Image (cartoon, rainbow, N blue to C red):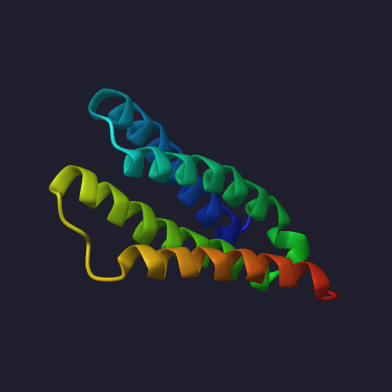
Length: 117
């Protein structure tokens, strides 16, 4: 496994673990924001594993998409969790910036499929 693929697998594991933890927190303390963050983390953990498997065939653009997705998850889900646990946001526009990065990451993955290697 390449270092790039290992990075995405590592990030997938962190996202999956955080998603399960936030699901448990949402079940105990409630909060729609926690449910959304947990769902995003779990779904994108699986996506990151898939992207890691594709990196050898799809190349650096797919890798970049996965890294951008991970950054987007950090901002989007971190902001939702911060609102639930701290009653404050990470910073102004953190969630929208994270959402935009998630969209950009998915688009990079899509474009990687169109490039010939």
